[in-house]
Image (cartoon, rainbow, N blue to C red; front, side, top):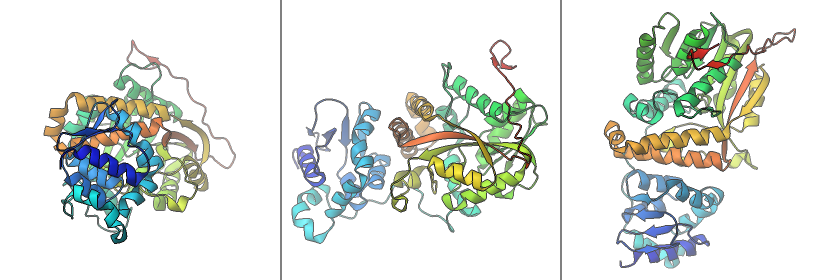
Length: 436
C-alpha cells in the first residue's frame, strides 16, 4: 500500500474527470497533489469505504465526524477549493462515486475498491440522528429535531456564541466585536417592529432569551418567548431573573402552533422559520397573522437558498439533515415573501444581510477553535468537529451566494390601508448604555 496518496489521487481524478484541487496526505504518510495551500488528510482507509458506500456529502461528513479525515491549514480554503466538486458539480461527483458500486464497472474501478478495503463501512458516528418518529414537521418530530440541535449543553453554546448568546446573524455596521454586532441586530429588529412601552411582543424561537431581554429592558415591552428546547428555556429564565425582568418576560416551552393568548402588538421570529418546513410554512404564516392585532408587525429573519431551475430536483443537504438541523428546510426568498402575502400580510420591507452572516460565522468558528479542548469536554470530539465544519462551510456558502439571509417586515394591515409602520427614531447612546 506504498504511496497511497498518489494512487488515490490518480484514481479519483480518473473517476471525476477533473484534477483534485487540494493536496492529499494518506494514512501511510505519502502525499500527492498541488504543493501550495492546505492539505486534506485521509487518516484511515475506512474513510474511503464511507465515501463509496454513501457518495456525496453524507459519506464525507461521516468520515469527518469520526476523525478519519482532517485538514491541515486553512479550513476555509479547503472548503472553497472543494466547492466545485461538492456543490457546483455535486451530482456528477455523486454519480462517479456510485459508479464504482456498479458490478459492470468494477473491473475498471477495482483498484479504488481495493484501496478502500473491505465493505461494508463502519457504523455511522454516534452523533448522527437516525431515529425519527412520525411524519416530518409534526409537533413530536419537530421537538425531537430541536432537541438534537439545541440541547447539547448551554456551556458549549456559551463558548461558541460568546456573552450575547445570540444564535443568528449579527449586524455589522461600525461594531467591532461580535457582542456589539449582535446588540445592533437586536436593536435593528426592535426598531423595525416599532416597539414601545407596554407593547406585547411574541418572540418565536426565543433561544436563550437575548431578544426578549433587549425588548423588555431597552423598549419596555411585555414579552412572551417560546422555544421547544428545555435547556434554552432554563438558561433564559435564569438570565431574566438576573436582569430583574421577570415581571416583563415569560419564557415557555411551547410550540408556535399552541400559542392561544394573542393578540400581540408585534412578533419577532429570528432564525426559527428554517425549522418550520415547506409543508407547514403557510400554516406558520397564517398562525402568526392570526396572533397579531390589526396593525401589528412581524419581523421574520430567515435563511434562504438560491432557487433551482428545476425545483423538483432540490435536495436537502445530507450533512445538515443528519448532524446539524434535522428536517430543516430552506426556501427561496421569493417563496417566503409570497407565502407571507398569501397569509394576508403586507410586506413593507426586505433587507438582505448575507455578508453579515459570513462574518458572524467566522467569529463563531474562531471562538470554537480558540478553546477547542473545552469545547470537546463540553460535548464530544465528534460534536465539536460537526460544529466547526458546518459553521465554516456555511460561511463559505454565504460568501459564494449559495445561501442568503433576509429580514422581512410584514404588517397585518387594516382594511383602511394605514399600516402604522413609521419607525420611531432611536439611536444607541454609548454613555447611557441604552437606546434613546
